[in-house]
View (spheres, rainbow, N blue to C red):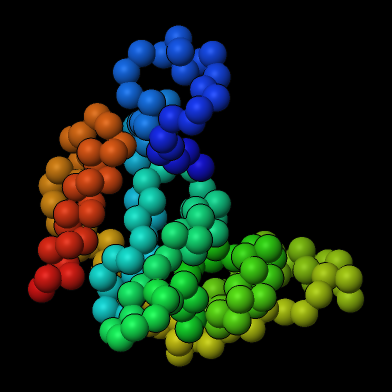
Length: 187
């Protein structure tokens, strides 16, 4: 996953040869996918569809690698005193996020997982027999609430500049998404 980074003390020789901003990824969050050049915006949203964490990646990047960095960035302030919450009660996601290491990570942190298993993973598990492990269990009624995520993404895609990606730089594009998220929170 391509992430924006600040320059470090020991910058390598490639950074010296590349003029311009150092906090911008080389690909500017733009990558080739089936439809041409595109960008993906990965979101963690609350129960009302308001964005909590936003990550921008190139269009050809998969969804699954963005999950653990997004969970690491999650900070939800408490109403009273105390540290911000970093552990949601449950995580709803589509089949693209179904991976053994994601499930193990979420289980270790005590986060209820509501992610269905793709047919190819289920077939592979069955083919391995008892070595394949237990079938994945999830609550289908709870999974029906996943549309909250899609509604959160649709709120952001209402902005034409964000839906079409008019910005050249990933930082500017992410800034537009953050602005749309702020407006979603003020409604």
